Length: 251
Image 1 (spheres, rainbow, N blue to C red):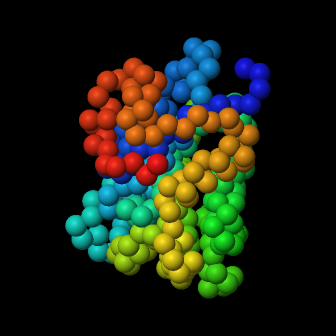
Image 2: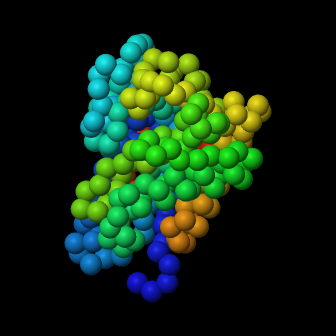
Image 3: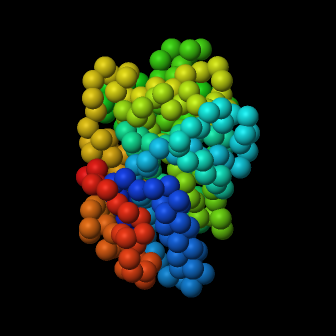
């Protein structure tokens, strides 16, 4: 292929965790199949929210799951420890074929962080990285607060999972866990740091735009019913919208 890499960006609204994970797996398998067959298939980014759920990564410790209460706990294949997903948090899942970009997972993680750093700057927040602690942080170094968590899985150089940016979630859920296994730092949100509400749609659009900028992509964005129909065609699977049980979309 000549020219920039292309991607589909799907704005899916609020989707339960397990069906969204199954969708990632289906897209990953489709990308791997296309690679094997010499077929060009655009990369994919999914933008969505989840109902309250705790996810435990491969290197997680059950002792960090303090009091999950009524929230579901799902053990998954990404790296990292335990984290929380819920309403008011924007999740971005990246289904990218790194064979077509670069084979460098460290660079990939830094590029994901760069997307968030640039988005925060658009909304008047200064984020930064902390050595040996993957994520994006705000505040003063030494007492910094995590605003975005990251975790990925890679199979045949095709990525799954991604990032979770706290826009305005109920931060009390984080007290039920030791987030990412880090006990000596706090968790925050864009709304808390700014002292005002944030437009989730605008943040999602910024993440999409910065994805294009950082990865040199040319993306096509789809939302609502059009996004689900397009996914059905991409995967040759009918009824995806029924299985994902979408709620009103963010875009």
